[in-house]
Length: 226
Image 1 (cartoon, rainbow, N blue to C red):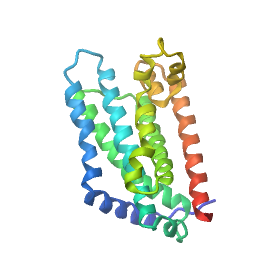
Image 2 (image 1 turned 90 degrees about the vertical axis):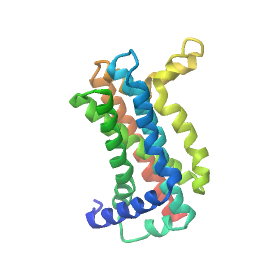
Image 3 (image 1 turned 180 degrees about the horizontal axis):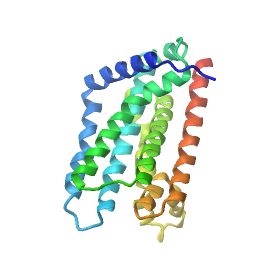
């Protein structure tokens, strides 16, 4: 069983916060979902549907992208290997490296819900938490594959395009049948949950989240021995 040190987690969190606050190219991303929320607020559609696009932007451009950029920056400065070989456990590192983007994501989603006037159900809150963890894992994976912060843009691009926009991909499924697979994406499951379906979407998002973190953990362990 891995030991978890909240002191080390806090230290990693504060380090990432300082890096994030100094990098304006990354930190400015937090305003994009809020701007899109204001644009969608007055649209004549269901209140839950109004939230879907801002959520997609949040998970793609904030959660996944910022997480990938922070991981890639560690690699670019050759500090990631030192961190992985430090007394901090792998759990400390993964929790600490994900805490900042998870907190930022939670704040943005809360503001988006307030702006639109949407009160999420308990099941929706659980799904949003799982989705945040899923995209943090994807960001970690993308960051581990990137060799520099600049390269993060290219490694995270498929994630930003595909995973958060499942419902939009389904709009083209009649023309391109292969896109029917998009109904199983976490974003499509989240949209189904917003429309009233509960059990299946949560189970689907949970499976995606577990799978993503298993891959992220395997890649981190591989970096320890490379």
